Image 1 (cartoon, one colour):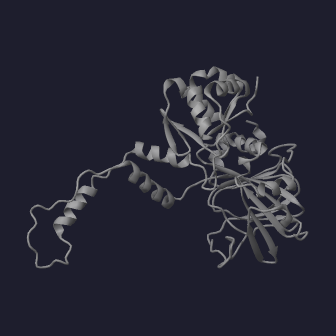
Image 2 (tube, one colour):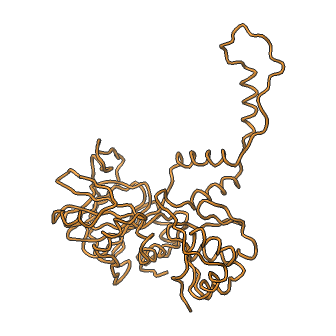
Image 3 (spheres, rainbow, N blue to C red):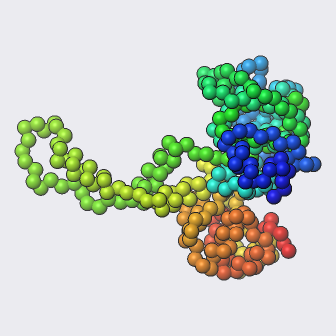
Length: 377
């Protein structure tokens, strides 16, 4: 990878010194960065169901929050200053945003979340806040001033639609220009303000709360673990206290419940399924029907890429996509692993993976992968 992305640090050095530890300001992280998005394009994405959009209009310390999708008409009625458009999941609909995301492939895809793009008019911002995840803030056109601080008091303003800190005490200030980037670990307080019309690309990394994982894991166990048998009490005796919960029943049910067990393999399978699911608002459209022969011909001529909203993960002999676990037979293993790591197969790679094409044809029919966008050479 280009060493400028991390300010001259190797990925190993960055992870050791900064990841989840302390911020890093990187001047010229992407030299000559060509901002791929105009406001017009971002407005179009804000009306796309594959993205989630918010519009924040500020008036002194008050913030009005509107939720998308938005029509272009909304933006013709905005003031000249003090508003921000936030569009999440831009990598789902914009190849340049996906390519930007994959610059960070030294980090596991199981941690990747999405690219959020914000356009701010002068003075625009969302107020001082903190995130529960790691984020890289890459500046496109314009300038944004960032105030950053460490603080133990993370109380939020009550009754606000935004999670704004009640008291914010920055430790430092920096101004980002085109190509500059700021890395922030989780729970570092920060406040960004547009000095002029500007665009910021936020590359975020998911970190599920254990409470969320607990809920989903228990649902997973409910689907995949079973306890045979039924409560029985053939030796039941008459009781003078019919309203009392009996010890015999408690003991028998406790013994049955103690048979619930899970292993590290169960946890791994759960994580593969859970982390490979798309976000709830994503709908996979069925592609045009292609029989296997037509699919194979086009795949070997055009290449293949994973649906941009779907993680593809693997562990051992299993691959995980769209919340499903797939056993990787020897015929498909190499191709699926390459596809998971690169997110796409070039036409040449597809030709070398002919034995995997029947499986990939099924994935194509389900909308998990797309034809094209690979290097045709």
